[in-house]
Length: 314
Image (cartoon, rainbow, N blue to C red; front, top):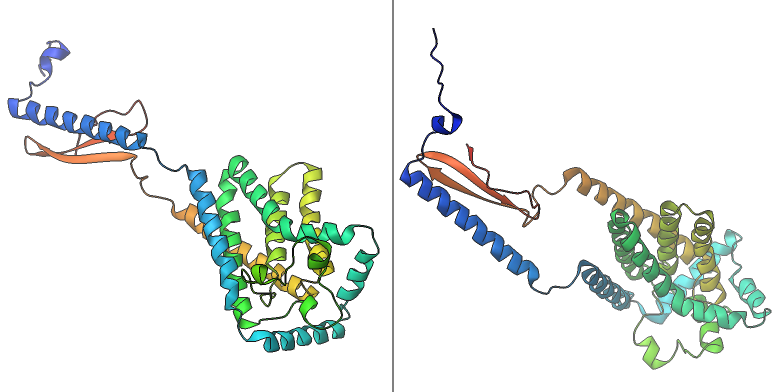
């Protein structure tokens, strides 16, 4: 017959050797010290994630704007490409840029409104939507940000491959209404020194507008806001054409860039989610100890308050 140990549980527990007890106390001390150092590091003032995103996007946008200077070839080649665009649009019966500009001139103050819209909408609306998505739809933010950055890269390649004069500089009877109807002269030496007027294909205004507009439609449930998201790219199209800054061809190229950039960003996001980070930095600290000849893993997790030392034979 099997003998049953009638002793209390406390009496049946093996008493650790002095060496084992010393090792465990040392491990606990090291883990607590590591936790203190981690709290000290976390208390060090650092730039918030939102601030880092602002600096990142601002830097990359500025780099994209400056890289428009890669559109080479000079005025002669750019005007030659513009003439090719005009011939293509005439064959397709969509060469109506001059008619749209004349129509805008017949509406009181509309050229001024469109001129200032050209100068402000591209940056202001994009920034506002980035902030809205970051604060209210964080999971969708990486896709939006990456799509905008990819669109910039694709656009720079287009500027280098096909430098094109905008309608206002193509000698086809379309005027520069931004310079004539607002206080900003696009042809001044100061303004033109910051961008290349021959970086027109694709239209980055349309690319951004489509990416932003489709993001609004996808994320909001309010019907009015969805309609505004759908209308925004159309408004930008009117602005860039009526002010003489882009052909319809440029806009079509910008739309293609937007769709391609969005697709690439979505695929990158999906791959990231499938892979996922194996261990978050700073979330788990571990040490392998030798307790009485047995390998032991001592883990300390942060920031969960329930974390404790886990001594598990391996």
